[in-house]
Length: 284
Image (cartoon, rainbow, N blue to C red; front, side):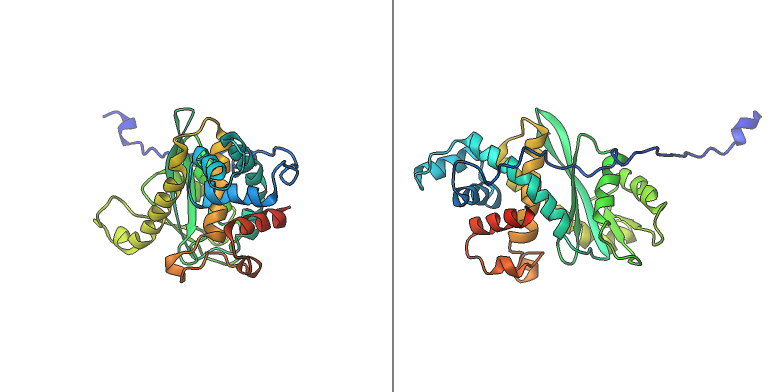
């Protein structure tokens, strides 16, 4: 027999990543002119209310503002306002997302940019329903998973034990191994495989996987009217604004029809468009 037939081989991965490689994706800065636009603050708020909160396409948003409110505005202006607002809302999202739950669920869903498949990585706290990370990438590999999970656990307490529930994508365990190298309290990974509970782990953690699947459906319903994106920044902008809407403005049935992140200063504002403007001012 050849001696190599008895050799045990191990697969070893060592990542040499810079902070820039695993940086959370973000909308591009387009200049400090969000409140120096030609239209009023109320029109900016209406654009975000229709385009983001109600999930209406940019062309229909412009049509409604023209034909119902007699506001002369184009669909390109709607897109421009969204891109400008997204930069500030991204800072607001990261600053005010708060602590995370002991159990988080993560998954990725696809969108198309210039006709090519891209992936939005979402992580949600399963008790308070806060989206704790949203990362846009052109692949489903370990590096986007590291970027998403790193941001998700950024606000965890020092001695908090985190359990992450995902599907069988091998990028998640690879990302958790990478993150656990520098963590005292290791992240525990639980996999839910397939649509049926064929093992004990899938049976126990199926309910958490269903939470992220529902989030994916909600996200897709908001971006579907865009019918794909022509640029990465446009997709990133709408994703960012969706997270702002979901975390701070959207009433959630399982939370007694309150938003996942409660802010008393928003509760005293009656209209969605005014809440959007208030968030932008706080972000500034």
